[in-house]
Amino acid sequence: MTDDVSAVVYDLDGTLVQLLVNWKTVARDVTTELATHGVDASDADLWEMLDLADKANARDAIEDVIGAHECDGARRSTRLPHADELLSRDVPVGVCSLNCEAACHVSLETHDLAAHVDAVVGRDSVATRKPHPEPLRATLQALGVDGDAVFIGDSPRDELTAERAGVAFEFV
Image (cartoon, rainbow, N blue to C red; front, side):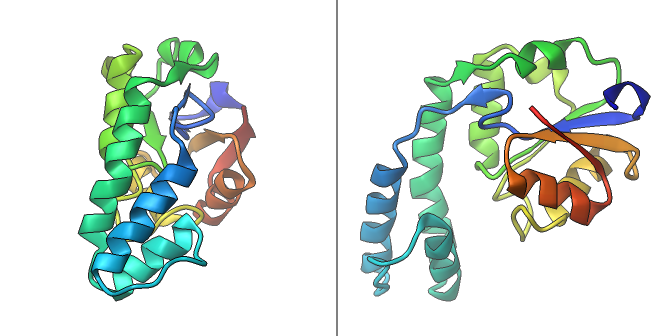
């Protein structure tokens, strides 16, 4: 499928690289930060915490906490086999990730992939996050492609994102 498209968009974590992030520590740190904003997030998962942060007007502070962990994890990440495939592409390449945009750039630079990626859209690049189609559509727009693309990812959420955006999908 990837031979007949005008662009290829990859998910990042679990597809091109494996970020080394202790998500339990991230959740603990976010819970602590939300408490300083008067929000009890003790029973929330990380995605719910982001929604709570929006309601408490604390999104920037929470993104800073999560992003710091993700960037550290990006520096220590391991490169996965699809990263080598990315290097051989002769069409525009993008990354559309649930990780923050800065962590995407850090991991791409860490693994010498940055020069081969034409557009990066992270969780904090647009107002919505996967599986909403907006992040993938924003990546395609940055690549100058209208949908004649394939999104390669590692999760049902990635597959649903592609479906909602009207884009072909491949699992890694």
